[in-house]
Amino acid sequence: MFEPCVCGTGGKNTGQPSCVPIIDRTAKLILVKTFANDGTRNSVKKSDFVNGVLPDAFIQSQINEADTSKRWYVTPKINAVADTRAEPVTFDVDGIPKIIDQGVRTFVGSFYDKLGSPTFAGVLNSFNCQDISYFEISVNGDIVGMDNGDEMLPIAIETGTFFAGVVRGTKAELNSVSLTFAVNELEKDENLIQIGAAQTATKMLNTRGLVDVVGEALAVPAISPFSVRLDLGFIYGAYNNAVPFEGLDTTDLVVFNTTQSVLENVQTATPVVGMEGQYDVGLMVNAAIGDTIQVSLSKLGFEMKPFTYLIP
Image 1 (cartoon, rainbow, N blue to C red):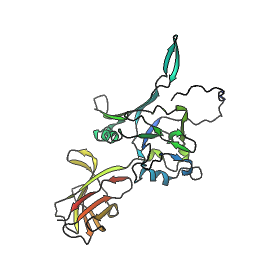
Image 2: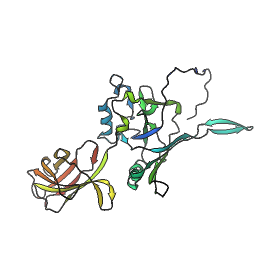
Image 3: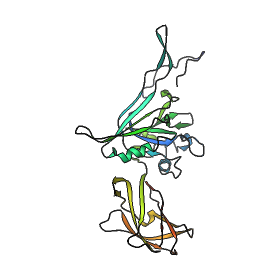
Image 4: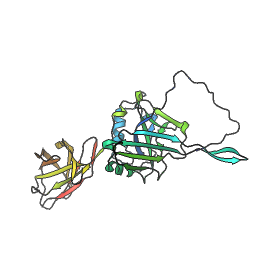
């Protein structure tokens, strides 16, 4: 947003101290809804700091937030970033260009190699109809946003400009997903500010967003009140051959009998030999034939849409 000069104001002093932090190039993005469902603006507040440091507990709670309208969606590393503002919009008066508005600031970056999958493009495009903003994670591990006094806001994105496209690989270039969007026209570059890496208890460059898991109960071997075979995998992979979810523990599963409104006790989760991602799950239950059982995942760093099966 271009703000014309205000009468009666003077310019700011142009001297600088010997050490001035700079905002370095972008390594990752943290996508976040601009407003949560409760109407509050998503931000990092000064009150979130403890002794001048943003605690690891706060950062992890944002990444693993159950309320998706408040969650931080951390992208993998993004490369070939061009974050530039176009020349100001001008109007000629007798051949003299008068500035009437700032130029559009556009962000372009690419995710390469295994990150350049059509599935990942679809993940990113799931945000393109929403009112979203973003924090940047710089190559130094700083978190970059917009200064708003007692809080740092994420940088607002112009709705309808967020798009991820697949760029197929060639002999000279890797597969990639190209991400483009325009920064909201009301954002002013001079309000960009950062939380330095030394001010975060978490190494931000080591963070990642939640990983989507999908699952189902298999009909073979037969489902009983006491046992079921589950097939768990990620949303990535080949047709009918998803990348398997491995390392399941009994504490990772939440099994709920929706018919009787009671949690079932998971006794075992044994990997099926030769069938990665499949587990024979043993239950200590009071379930009966005809009951509906809901299965969900409770494992830090992962999220699975609950699925159900019927005890035949």
